[in-house]
Each structure stands twice: as structure tokens, then as C-alpha cells.
Image (cartoon, rainbow, N blue to C red; front, top):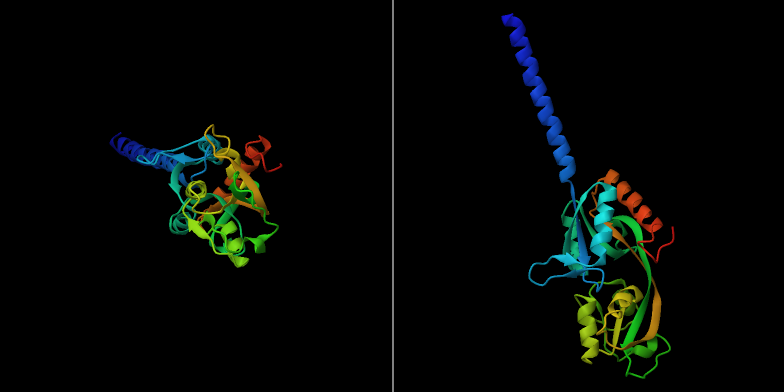
Length: 246
């Protein structure tokens, strides 16, 4: 009987250890977190200046993305240039809405498509000047997000660009007449110009099409990447990304 009790005691200890390991594994799985670096986009992502809490329609959409992919999502406000540096340095981190270019291709793992939009140059509604092409813009002051695709296209055309951290800054500069044109996307404009106090602007020139993706840490787990792509496909079917067709 004494030997039997000892054996049962050993089994009980092993069973307890097994249960602890199982509980730990489940807890670890539940604790997997994906950090999403988001750029200030009126209507989609707006961060509180003091708390840095991110709000907006995009939060609900990408929280659902995380639920579909089986991860908790944490939002962190950033700007394009800094976000591209940070995502290469931190595991389980992605930038929301980064354009996929040959120069950037090898630096990240990509999920999406998230959005397709037009790149445009916007002028104040009161500015009646007309420009036929990029060459006609020489001598003008043009604002764009630092290290953005649209800034790159303008530089490639030999045009100087006043690069800043966000579209919001470029818009303020435009309305203060510190720049002549604001280079942005019509997706940003859709939300910016929907505000009741939105400034009066007009489209001056189109610069082409931009496709945006989730750009993730280069060593992101392939299984998680596959789940993110499956989740994005589901959201496209639901119509959450209106510029992308299923």
C-alpha cells in the first residue's frame, strides 16, 4: 500500500506539472500581441496628444483583423520615416498602410493589399493657377510626408520637396501659404475633407496610383503572416477596405 501511494504521488506530481505546462502554453498563445504602427489619418487614426491613445474607424477594423488572425492588437502612433525604422527593430510589429516599392521590398514581410488610391497634388481653392505636368511645377513649394512614395516621385522628377512628419502638417502649411501644393492621396483627402471645418481645396494634378499594405518585421512568423493575409481577405469580402475588390 505504501508503494502504491508513492506511485500515485509521483503520478499526481507529473499530472500537476503537465497541467501547469498546458495552462502556460494557453496563456502564452493568448498573450501573443501584434503592435500596429499607425500614421495620423483623419477619420481613420487619430492619437491623443498626451496619452497617445489611438482612436478612429481604423481601430475597430484592425482590432477585428487581430481577432480573425488570433492575436491581440496594440496601436502605437508613429510617422512614416520612424515607423519604417522601428518595424525592422521590433518583433511582431507592422506598419499600417505602407506603400510597397522595390526599394522597400526586402526590408519587410508584406500582408495585404489594404488600399488603392490616387496620388494627387492639392492647391488652395483660391489659387487659380494651372499646371499641365510636373515640369510646370518648377519653382513651387511642395509639401509631402518624409520618405513617402509621393515625395520620392517628386524628387525623381527633379523637384524639391518640403518633407514633414505628417499630412496634417502639410495641410496646415498649405493653408498658411507656406507651401503652394500638398502632395497626398485621395484616400487621406476622403476623410480630411469630410470634416465640417475642412478647408476648401482643389485638385491641381494627379501623380499616379498608390497601393498600401501591412509592412511587418522581416522575421515575422510565417504562420502569423498567413493568418493576417487570410484575415485581410475576409475583411475585403466584408467591404471593410472599399478600394480593394475581393
